[in-house]
Length: 342
Image (cartoon, rainbow, N blue to C red; front, side, top):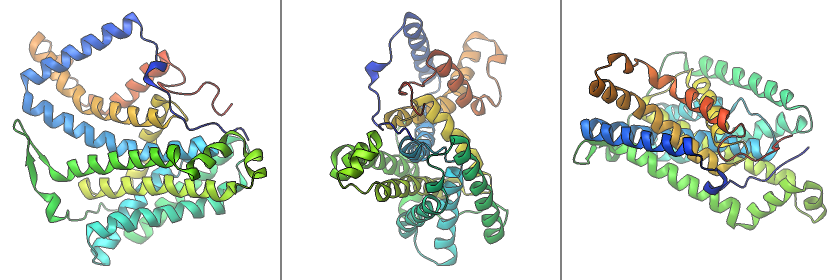
């Protein structure tokens, strides 16, 4: 099986074009105009986009790790996000432990579930057509959804926020929930930790060596199955962490896995398959675009008097519009590697 490096691409890998420069200037001008017109609303939406984008980063980061290492299109990744949220509900409401305990324990449990998936199913399809792995993980996703329905029911659930994070922080022009700021901090630290683990540790270097040439790495005594299993644990752990944070903020339901797996694939496609940096950049880009686009269009409609510009429900279409535009210009994504998985 052909495995490629997880190295991301630099910003210099994207060639600037006159059209791109003009588009950047126009978008920047609209953002400034929107801020001047409604500073409080703009900042509130920008923070909301940052928080949502960070959740997308966590989910897409785990997906990108698994896809980049193993070449497996893990359609069960969204179900792992959902499981992370529901395990948090179980730990807090049924067992009676605190959110802080759930924040640590729930991702570990999801990571172990990921190991079971990798050892029990996916190791047998590594050298098969990618469609086989996709169908296998799709079946696992359906199974997990029905297990959650049987164990926790089909209705929405929620957990109480810890007292330290339930208040709001005053930012001058607006206030923001402390839990949102906490989500951003946790997400940023997770991204930094993953980067340092893959790029700066001997374990990470051995994994990258095995990705480039597995036979040579195993000849040198590197146990690649153990390392791939560890990376699957890491990818699943991050998915579970995203589920904990999202579930604690807005609650959980059976549809959240399906919702986030679709958006995670959008993020990976926009950022470029095989690029961790691309997943981070694309997640934040889509999060901000989804939250700020309605504000910009509302401001533009007010300034021009063309009311139909404020399209209702446009935020739900934004991720897919961003993906279409990016893939039309760069079919590999913003930071994708040429020939990846070919």
